[in-house]
Length: 227
Length: 207
Image 1 (tube, chains in turn yellow, purple):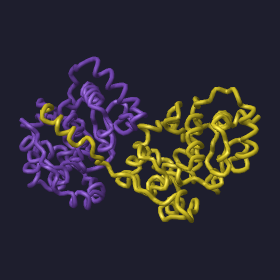
Image 2 (cartoon, chains in turn blue, brown):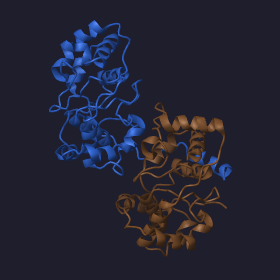
Image 3 (spheres, one colour):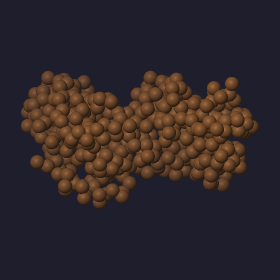
Image 4 (spheres, one colour):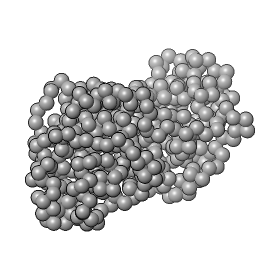
């Protein structure tokens, strides 16, 4: 049976059978409006998130983000425990709609498994989780520079302790893995993260790689580094 | 005996009914005693008297998740999951019969797993518990649980025949098993041949 099926599998190996992620207009499109209201995000935001239901719906996420939401310390998967609900809902809805490109994750937030209300329930579950014991950090060599940059460019929106702002959909950046933070700001700077806030692109556009590393390292040590 | 699956010919049907099938998965309350009688009549010659099939081409059903069993049988019967072998056995059964069968098999005790290739099992265990973040393969325990027993939405994989798991993975990777949830199409497509074989061996070895 195996022998007859292997060539068969190879024949189809180059075909993508899982539904491809759609592509919605983003930062590259003239007239782009960040966080423009869309029906799914609105419906999920209006749904009162139920953490117990969210824990069930989250099963399909655990294979990558882990039961405790901690993702991977090497930053391949972000840490989600304690993230703001509005931020989680927006990002998940953006991936479903193709405003944020993530072909790796997209199949796992498909409508066959995750309904619109589930987004709010999953967000409520994650928001209520305590921060995990281990967070990936940078080399710690330029934390003073990181702090200076953070205070100058980041703290106004993301909060001096990195707590984010739920009302404005600004993510919590404390207790996040260094490598993930760094990859995201690099993508934002290079306009590869298509659902970016133009204010973020403006803030990051003149950053050198070394400064992005310094500020990411500092953020990964918040809130303790603030004191 | 070969578990043959016809070419995928009902794309529109599958797409159109994909969500309906997920919604209709919840069975009526199954009666395991009635299910036992039905099983003895129609199923046991392939799947074994207690669902611990002895033949690798026929999946073990003992201890399988009740909702999963009911959904798969309905999907076989109605053509969403294609099988020339299964459909004729199910065509005369109604939803209650399927619920009864599901209740019966879910209650059976899975037989202890037999040993396999130790090196493959070890590699498979690592993948099962950690996934592969570089290729975007989640760990299997997220959905199928650490002990492989599954949950309401996801099937039991512990102790299943290696050949059956491999065949399902090939069908998923080739886009030929599209009933139920779709994430396995992605997972199977992202796994390498070695990973697929290793994780199948590990699943088969789980008790």
